[in-house]
Amino acid sequence: MTAKIIDGKLIAAQERDELSQKIAADESEDMPVLAVVLVGNNDASRIYVRNKKKAAAEVGIGCEVLEFAESIGENALLEVIDELNDNPHINGIIVQLPLPSHINSLRVLSKIRPDKDVDGFNPYNAGLLACREPEAIVSATPRGILKLLETTGIKLVGKHVVIIGRSNIVGRPVAMLLLNQDCTVSITHSKTENLPEIVYQADIVVAACGQPKLVKKDWIKDGAVVIDVGINRVDGKLCGDVDFDDVLEKASFVTPVPGGVGPMTVAMLLKNTYEAFQKQRLNGNVHKCSCGKNGCHCEHR
Ligand code: GUN
Picture (cartoon, helix red, strand yellow):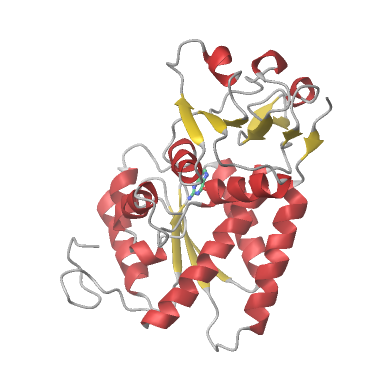
């Protein structure tokens, strides 16, 4: 078998086109606006943020990048988030990860108003997803992966998905999302014993472990679908967590790196931002807290 290549670049372009048409047809005088908080000088983060900003402009979403020195304190960053939460012109807020080690990322992500949390990293949204609540904002990479799987035409119900990696950004949310699609989900990680044998049981493999070309053809059952979330640079060249050339002869479908999951993450972030904008417009962009006070600063958010 020679695998079909899932063209994430093309599918993401179609998603962005669709979004761009919706935004152009939207009669609102306001434009959706995404705020991106970038801390420090991580080269990869800078490239990702530049790509997000460019893609946002192309579909008609405003994007404000707020840059801060590596030395910014956690409290100062929390204040920045609070200001963005309260700014009615901002519809989506993301904090580019990783943050410097002196900052507690979870505390910062928890501060983002759930209805502006377009990365879906606030534990509130992660919790809604885990509870199968359709109102959850689902983080962009898992949402993009689901879209890629849907384009293959394979039926997801009952399929065994093996996820390699248990991160808050990919492994955990993609597990919840695919569980909600009635897949049978196994999450594996760096301490998992007999990893190749477990992966061999998969109908769908999602590799998100940050280990260049870890997944080899003899780990893959004939006809399995392989989704590669990895972005690694080896000898100046990008590669994923899957040995792409190797698995081509075993898989039915495989995503390339670059041009697979990466472009979908950006497209889905923009989609989340537009959907957040629409919802906020319906709700008057006023955070309604469970304490009953609009725009409150309490801990109920
Ligand atoms: N760092 C790596 N991936 C992501 C992502 O999807 N969103 C954010 N905010 N940071 C990241």
